[in-house]
Each structure stands twice: as structure tokens, then as C-alpha cells.
Image (cartoon, rainbow, N blue to C red):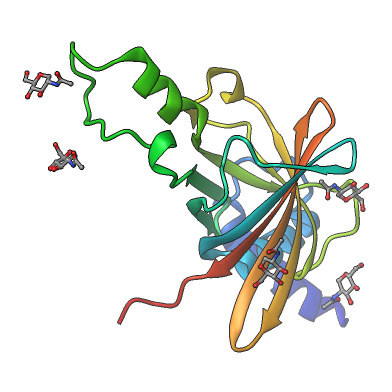
Length: 192
Ligand SMILES: *[C@@H]1O[C@H](CO)[C@@H](O)[C@H](O)[C@H]1NC(C)=O
Ligand SMILES: *[C@@H]1O[C@H](CO)[C@@H](O)[C@H](O)[C@H]1NC(C)=O
Ligand SMILES: *[C@@H]1O[C@H](CO)[C@@H](O)[C@H](O)[C@H]1NC(C)=O
Ligand SMILES: *[C@@H]1O[C@H](CO)[C@@H](O)[C@H](O)[C@H]1NC(C)=O
Ligand SMILES: *[C@@H]1O[C@H](CO)[C@@H](O)[C@H](O)[C@H]1NC(C)=O
């Protein structure tokens, strides 16, 4: 690229870099990061999940057989994810806030079968990254229903797959202790 072109590209990008407050990278890397986050940005609806322990498939005890979820990635480096099971036994008909006569067992079922968290979205440099393939961190998480996830960095591999007019995000999730997951998300189309 011609020097002026590079300078212009960096300048154009520089106006966005303040929008990536979590990135510790150089200006040039932050530009690449910005381009990639812009490509990934969107709201995605959960399609399916699979779990494994040390590479061997296991049932997804937490999410159940038909989880629902929304994943939101923004171009300026933020994310939010919420997933819950849908089985009635995992979803007793509780209301919020909790009531004195609610049972701990009911709340326990809800707690065990749902997750919600949000925070910075950052590009990892552990593997080469581009608009369709790479690794990100969810974190350090600002808020999470699971207490030990606050401040944590969740490592996620991403692959973008375009098929049948839909855009899918395949996320490889590392949960620690040998637990991994694969989550397929489908980009939600603009609400008319
Ligand atoms: C999950 O959904 C994707 C996209 O529709 C599909 O390609 C994949 O085979 C599904 N995986 C499972 C385990 O159902
Ligand atoms: C569940 O709770 C909501 C809100 O209190 C109520 O409107 C609904 O009728 C309840 N459904 C069942 C199946 O109990
Ligand atoms: C809990 O209390 C509310 C009123 O305070 C009542 O409407 C509800 O039926 C009670 N639920 C149970 C499971 O007893
Ligand atoms: C992104 O990286 C993947 C894996 O390294 C590669 O297969 C793919 O062709 C790259 N895509 C683009 C658009 O460069
Ligand atoms: C993420 O990608 C890295 C590098 O390809 C790989 O070693 C790791 O197993 C992947 N993790 C998951 C959960 O897909």
C-alpha cells in the first residue's frame, strides 16, 4: 500500500480507536481489530449447542436440549450473551424479584440452566485472525450471573459461515476443566 494510503487508512481508523478502550494493541493492530469487530458485529440467535469433556461429546447438562439465546457483538468492542434452557423442569414459573414463598429448588433449577453475562469484546492474538476466522475474548467481564465470571476472560474461537442467505457464527467455547462447547448462532435480520 502507498504510504499516504496507509496514513489515510490509519487516520480514518484512528477516529474509531477510542471506541476500543479495552485493546492494548498498537494503532495498526487496533485498526485490524476494528475491521474484524465491525465484520462480526450484530445480534445472533442461538441455533444449537454441543458440549465435550476432554474432546469426548457429553450431554449439555446446563443448557438442555433446546436452549435459546442471544449474542450481541458491537463494532466498538462490547458483547452480551444470554442463554437459557427451555425444558419446563428447568424453567419453573418464577417471577422477579424473588418472593418469600418461592422455593430454593425452583431458583436452583433456573440458576443451573441459564447464563447471562456482558463486557468487553477483544481480539486475541493467539491465532491469526481475519473477518471470518480467529479468536476473541469475552472480557474482562463487567457483569455475569455466575459470580466467578466477573472479571474473567472467556476465550472463544469464531468462524463465520454464510449459507442459504443466512450468516452463521460458529463459536468454539473453552470453559475450563477440559469442558468445551460449540455454539452455532444465526445473525438476526434487521427488524423492519
Ligand atoms: C447446528 O446448526 C448448524 C447450522 O444450521 C448446522 O450446520 C449444524 O450441523 C448443527 N449442529 C448440530 C449438532 O445440530
Ligand atoms: C406464570 O406466571 C405468570 C406471571 O405471574 C402468570 O401470568 C402465568 O399465568 C403463570 N403460568 C403458569 C403456567 O402458572
Ligand atoms: C406465594 O404468595 C403469593 C402472594 O403473596 C401467592 O399469590 C402465590 O400463590 C404463592 N405461591 C405459592 C407457591 O404458594
Ligand atoms: C481467514 O483465515 C482462515 C483460516 O486461517 C482462512 O481459511 C480464510 O481463507 C481467511 N479468510 C480471509 C477472508 O482472508
Ligand atoms: C480454538 O482454536 C485453537 C487454535 O486452532 C485450538 O487449539 C482450540 O482447540 C480451539 N478451541 C475450541 C474450543 O474450539
